[in-house]
Structure formats: C-alpha cells, structure tokens
Length: 318
Ligand code: PMV
Image (cartoon, rainbow, N blue to C red; front, side, top):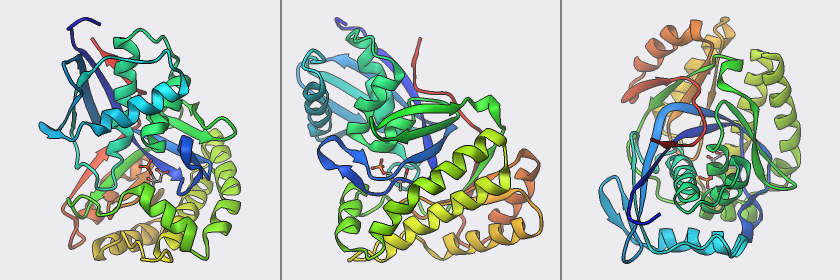
C-alpha cells in the first residue's frame, strides 16, 4: 500500500434475534444464531496507513495498540498469508461509543474492509465477516446491508434481504451516554457459567431466529415483533440472572418498553429491542415514526431520539 491512506466506512447494526454466548471461544463463534438490521447513519469511518509501529486512535484519542495486535494475531492465525506491516488506524464513530449501540461492530467491519483493500487480500464480504467476527462477533453482520444473518456451522454473515426489501425504521431512544462497565465477552462468559437460564436460551434461539427470518421474507411485522421481543427479553433474563447480575436497563429504558408495548396494543406497528446497554431501539413502519418519536421523547430520562433507516454494507470510501 506504500504510504497512501485507505478509508472505509461501516454502519452499526442491531440484532432482532440476539447472540449472547460463545460456542467456541477461540474463534469467537456465537452460541446462538442472530438476525440483524444494518443501521444507516450510525457509522465508523476508519483510515489505515503504514506506520513505524502499530498505533490506534479512536475518536481522536490514542488507545493501547494491542487492539491491533489482537486482530493481527487472529487474522494471521486464520491465514498466515494475510500478514501486514505496522499500521496506524484512526477510527471515528458518529454516535456514543461502547454504550449499547454496537460501535465495535461498525469499527471492526470498517477495519477489515480497509485492510483487505490496503493489502490486496481480495476477500469477499462473507470471507471478511469471518475476520471481523474475531474482533467482535456482531461486527461480522456489519459487512452487509439490510437484513443479515450470522449462523453456524461456518459462523459467517450473509445477507437475508437488501435494505430496499422492507423499509423499516429504527427510532433509538438514548437514555445514557456512559460507556458500559463490563465488556460483552466477559458478560457472556459469566452468563454461561452462572445463569440458570443459559442452556434454555441457547436451545430455544434457533426457533426465534427461524420465525424472524420467515417474517422478514414475508414482511410480516407482527410475527417479527413477537420473535424479536421474545429473543430480547430472554437474553436480558439471562443477563439479569447472571452472577453478578448484568442489569443494563435504567428507569427510562423500562418506561420506553411500556410505552412501545402500549402503542403496539393500540395498533401502531412498532416493537422494541435492547442490547448490552440502556438504549431502546424502537423498530417501526415508516407510518409510525412521528408518533413513536413523540412518545419516546416525552419520557423522563430519554435524552434524545435518533431515527435511522436501513444501511448498506461496509465499503471503501473513494
Ligand atoms: O459482538 P459483541 O461482542 O459486541 O456482542 C454483541 C451482543 C449483543 O449486542 C448484546 C447482541 C447482538 O446480537 O448484537
């Protein structure tokens, strides 16, 4: 690549049916199949250039370089021909980092996309999803736009449908801008060891995933809402029964869940999903966006809302 810079962009994603737990820790393989939406406008913009030593800057601040060593180690372990010289990586997110909005997903997807281009690896997005997964399993899904699956036996991501298939919108209620205190990987390991519900969660995840995929294919909002909320609540039941308990919700998170449930009961096409953080993502049809935004904004503790549609997969910026 010499000394020129390569720039890439990737969008964050949210899982509708969730991944929580690893089946093979060494290769960062998820224990449950997941289905996600890639979110337009929640981006990581990443530049890579050759440098004298590995250097990593996140949102303008230098971070310990082992972030790059970890991914270098993982990538070279998959294929020793994918080695690369010391690099300087600079990545910026246009949304809160490490607060349950999947900044690691967009970050790692953008990074492997830039590396692939910079060092002429010529890997496909599916192959790159396997590299991105080593950094953060949800990052595999950010390689693609629209509706994306991440399943065994190969633990690679695939597009189920492009963004144009179904114009779903996501109203995100930000209820805290604090970074999370415990990483997902650590939380998942604790859950697997200590939650009495963990085995049942893993065993029942395939049914939720299958229902959600079918619902996407048929554009059946009600069925997607049921499978997604069920998966989300089961994951949080596992989190909350982990020792020590992983309680990501705050009062505004709960109020938002009640508000969304009430709206759907009275016929508004909306459902909620929540990840390892306190933000609530309300997935809705375009006709419901204005009322969902208004209702969520009126909840005490909701700091702001942000509405996004479905985005494209990771790509190089010319
Ligand atoms: O990929 P990680 O390690 O950031 O874990 C993501 C886990 C959840 O966001 C809670 C669920 C999911 O499937 O994205």
